[in-house]
Image (cartoon, rainbow, N blue to C red):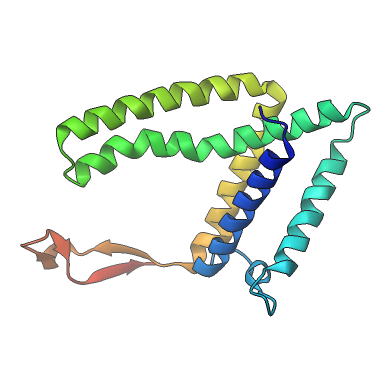
Length: 176
């Protein structure tokens, strides 16, 4: 894994961008989307920096390199889960979008290689990172299901009102 300051900065920026756009779509607290007069999300960045600092202090070890490796391995596990899920779903998505078979096969091969590499990276992260990263991921799913998903209505097509041209419902129904 990369231990360069640029790599750390890139991961921190990537995480904040996800958080910021999560605010826009209503997934996270508005605090993280508050901008100052220069259109910079300073308050959210300070909160994020504080949380990251506290998390890093929780893993203090006599050897700073060991502490950094722990944090990187935990980040590997939590960040690879969405990639594995996406690579697992890509064939269904491509087929449902009527992508030509040749492109589906090529993309499927690339996704399979990416999945194998991702599993290797998960294995390389070690058992502790797998345990804590898995628990963090599952806790995130539970929080999403209990808190965030209740803010949005699930829309399903009504079979009786299907548009014959597109096979898409003209009027959605809301599940509550």
